[in-house]
Image (cartoon, rainbow, N blue to C red):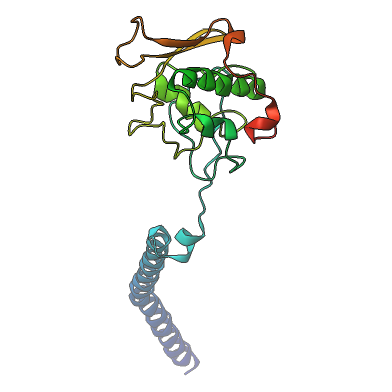
Length: 222
């Protein structure tokens, strides 16, 4: 009788163990699939979050600020471009520049006035403006220089549509930089042809300037 009970108990125990093992084997794939689905879902959300950060309208994108450094001008470097808006250190106009093209100014005197402007520039910046052409010299006079000072206003009547400074007859001045302390300003004159007998030249040496101007007359405080 006892042996039969032991045998029955052993069979029951074996069935219980078998049931537990079977249940564990059948449940594992479900758990594995559930975990895999959760991982994929989490990865999808993370991908969506990353994509959201890249959109222009997202808060993350809006919080990014790009700072543009101010331009630095090296001494003797040609001014390839005119100064940017807000780049100038002052809005003052130079009375000396306003003499250029004024009704009471003799056309033959204008190259000397331009030379005076260039001499004031040299006293302020240390050297004459460098440039391969008229427009690059003008860019420096407009304020594309290391001091960010305007020596002529951007709306000056002697500036043509190409940004060049012209004489009383509408011909661009010719600037000849001879050395750090010497520059020549040439007007083509009434015949509008360079290097003819009626050319008007100022400079070389610099003492030939028509007007010796004190720094206070520039209106720039130099």
